[in-house]
Image (cartoon, rainbow, N blue to C red; front, side):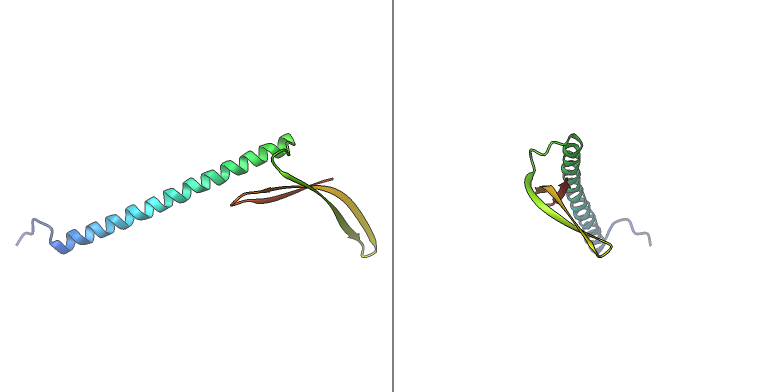
Length: 95
C-alpha cells in the first residue's frame, strides 16, 4: 500500500519543527543586531581615543601609588577619563 498524503501527526510535527527553527533564527538575528551596536560603540570610542578627544568622557584626577622592590613608593598624578553606558564601563588613565 502506497501512502500519498501526510497524516495529521506528521503535519503537526512539521509545523512545530519549523516554528522552532524560525524562533531560534529570530533570536540569533536579534542578538547579532545588539552585538553590531556594541561593536559600533566600541569603534567610536576607539576613534575618540586615537584623536585624543576626551570631550564625551567624564574627567577626574587620581593619584596612583606604585611600590618598587617593596621599598620605594612612587606617586603619580593622573587624569582619569571614564566612559559609561548600559554595556560598557571604561577607564583611561593619562599621566
